Image (cartoon, rainbow, N blue to C red; front, side):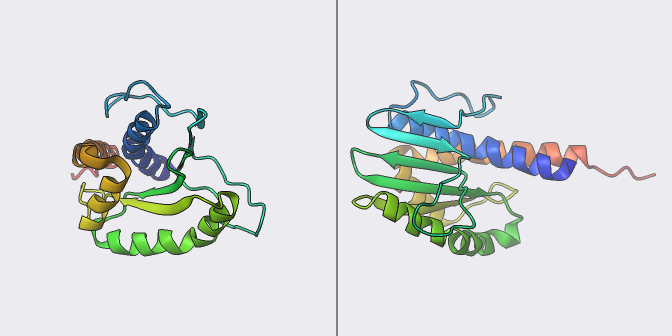
Length: 178
């Protein structure tokens, strides 16, 4: 539906900011496009030291994994870390519920990734920014793990994108009163 595609556009607009920032950290891209850029990430970025995946399924070798497509995935071969990134832009009241939902949904996938990367630290990062641009203290800590000192600035860009798209959605579906 039109509404679902608009929600996905908002989700992707916010997530691609984090995605390109992390790709830059891993030397997979040279620059980060501005938050308002229409640029869409490629599905795969690779070097000898790292890999980044945008909306690419994980093919399970060891177990049946129903939910095998996280929003983004980073593999850092230097530090031996894998990050499975799941993003959501729920309504304000549903932020906490979304974190629990995502964690439960992708548990089996994390186990699969641990088997595919046995000596690596594998972790899931739930990036939940509500439709009005709010986030939790836990998200600030998660972002700090992912991006270090730049995390707050990146969160603010993601917030801008989220609010901008929420406004666009509201304008698209505004009711006319006669």
